[in-house]
Image 1: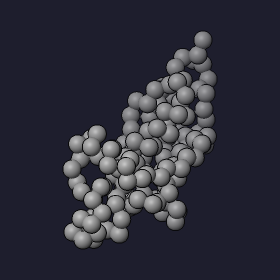
Image 2 (image 1 turned 180 degrees about the horizontal axis):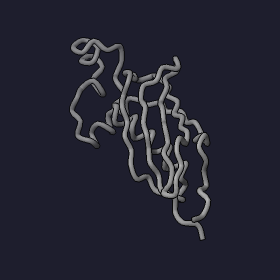
Image 3 (image 1 turned 120 degrees about the vertical axis):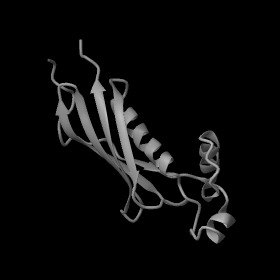
Length: 136
């Protein structure tokens, strides 16, 4: 069996994410999410009591999958992914994605990922499983 291209403890390149109101609106339109907290500020503040539009949980999960796909760079496939939102993220927040290899075996690797806001509070955690392509 060829040696895996990664080791436990290897890290993914960190990445910053910042949504704007247009991205929130378009993302929610694309996933058919009618919840107004993602695009209607007066409703969000008056009816739901939030200080700002909320960044979708699924969008945060998608950002983390993008990090994995960029890290793989065509040399493997994402075979499993699970995420959990832990804290609200709002328009104007700067979220930083980070990841680390936590397990390796003959089949591939498991990654642990997080998104933290500008106050270093974790908004989203995730795990990913990847399989690498065989080397020639």
